[in-house]
Image 1 (cartoon, helix red, strand yellow):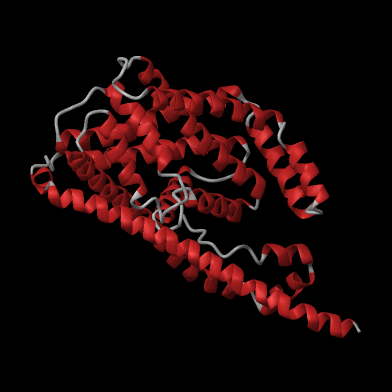
Image 2 (cartoon, one colour; image 1 turned 60 degrees about the vertical axis):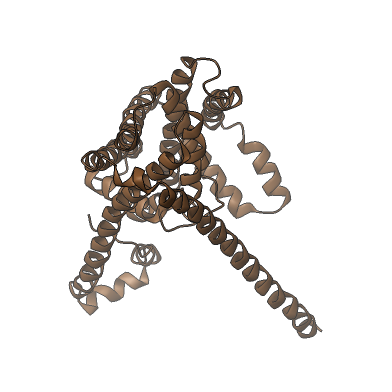
Length: 370
């Protein structure tokens, strides 16, 4: 009888797998359609306004890319504050390389936040501390976004009435206040008990243990206001550099616009590109530039040229991360044979008898060289 029940259940299990697989393929195809559809519209605007592209002041573009790279350096230092606070022994060189690798994967994964997951996994593989690694990435990203909306709120307050629709200004304010409330909730751990209750009812005890471990790490890393304040200040610097790069591209394409109108629009563009409806925000980010910069008085043709140039600069920065990732991969593969050869068979056999040693000899296969 048990064997009959197993055979009866088996078809149901196999039938679910194709359904999930086909659903995943459908979602991927929809994202591809959205990405290429939106990009086709943007490229069409660039082609119809190719005089704007021809007349770009190209001398400003390399400077814009350098500002983006410098912004990444500042963000890496910001992340390092939490990493070192948690006593995770990682050099700044390692953190900067991992940040660049994350930027690389953000360009090829379905969402622009995929690079954050790569950073968390890579750091956990290097340190063996999953909760602290994940928490540091989440807080670093959250404070970065909070600083963007803080800057946008300050500039939006100086806007003349009617320059930008009131609804968008209120959205900036709401995002800033919501971010502050979210950090307080994470610090106090108010959200964990409702989640724990739900997971207990669903018997997800393994996930509950992981959630509690992550909450403990979040609370601990959020307990030091001086560190958080310094991270916020560094975020303002990093955001100023990134927005400065975008503004340089805008100046290379057309006449200047008021910063008070420019900064809130770029903040909203940053949020729009995080929507997981495309591949690496392809087309979504460009459309956001056209829409939001249009509210600040930039024509669609000019905004499309700005968006395309910013996309190329983003790819150029991601390419640096790809080179770092390739170098780490090659270095890791070249070191593995030397590590195995450095131990004699007599040294290796006793190590296999100890389970704790066995666990340490089988880390996640990620590049570990600086």
